[in-house]
Length: 145
Image 1: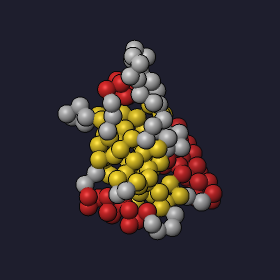
Image 2: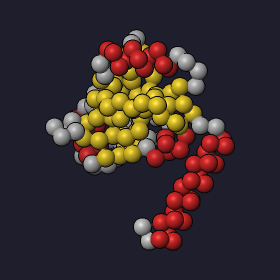
Image 3: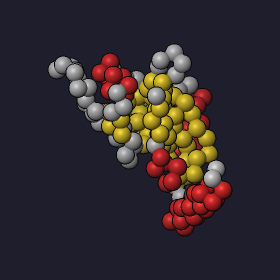
Image 4: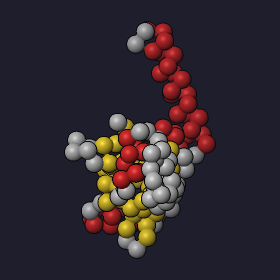
């Protein structure tokens, strides 16, 4: 099962992507497996040399008890120190952001999140993206691909 942040590829140019582990509680994993996740306006920030994802909405588990999780809490991402240093040095440059692009489960059954180091697109870049997408769609319609 995989959840993709479609809006991120429209809003950002991504230089590199990293696959990171994410610290979740049991009810959060169950909600993820049920497909109750939303990427709207989610982003990553550094707190004391650790990377956290903010505004990632994982709905409360329907069959949870009083110990259910908060839907919008910050969640820690697990990366190597070298990757964290690279990201923190790049993020200090103007215009760079760390954006979650997809959430998936690894072969071992662990929840992973793919984050991308990206630069925001300008308005005219977004128009070019729309034109390219429409041209591809027209070609597929015309030739039945």
